[in-house]
Image (tube, rainbow, N blue to C red):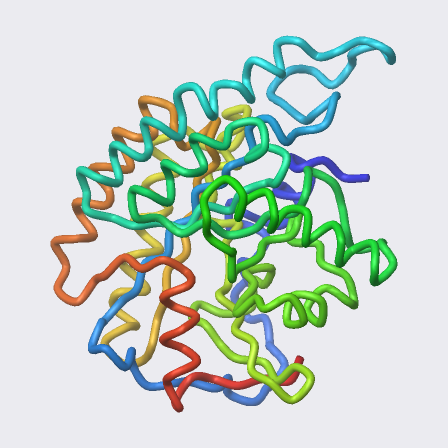
Length: 313
């Protein structure tokens, strides 16, 4: 099974794999659907994820350390790397979001919430969305219908018990949902999921006769690229995000555009990345019409907008 590092590397995150040599003839395809701008008058909506995973990782999790530990031994230094997420990372990011006036969506692993219920509650009390991220850090795509349903419900209940809020958004482990996942989410009352990379704006799919929103995620503007510092320095990573913002802002003069950015508790909450993020977001906020929205807000606005793109599930 591919590790996160291998997955990201093969996804072409540096952008080189997608380059086309001069003279290459591309197949003709139908023009993609486009929608008008945002119904509330926003020009570019920025959607920020804050992954709450600390404490939900497996016994031998992926980490920056060499994956050569003998069987039967706990990876003690890796455990401390994850602990950083709830001891330092999320508290630092929460303070930064307050300074910036930004509200985010926190995708919470159920078992992480059970270990740190006070932190989960604080996230909600400070105005951020609590979204579900599974019962624990394991794959669900191969589970039978009822087992997957219970897996999702257990994560929901952990969040509800800690925060008093029932989540309406979902993110599967590594985005790997199964054939039944969306039907289960709809059955359980979810409004949206993020396990999709196909657009730079939200869209609606028809599911069992009802509407279900897709609020696309990102691998490009995702701090998981910085785990081992093999591909990007912090400056290079933030420069990539700035370039994406500049391009989407230019496009947003003509059509609806959404920018997705993702931070993980143990990575995005480090001092240098919080400092860089603060400067980057301040740059974004200087542009007219740029707004930061939680994903539940985006989903509800999309459902109410008759111009939202619709696709088949």
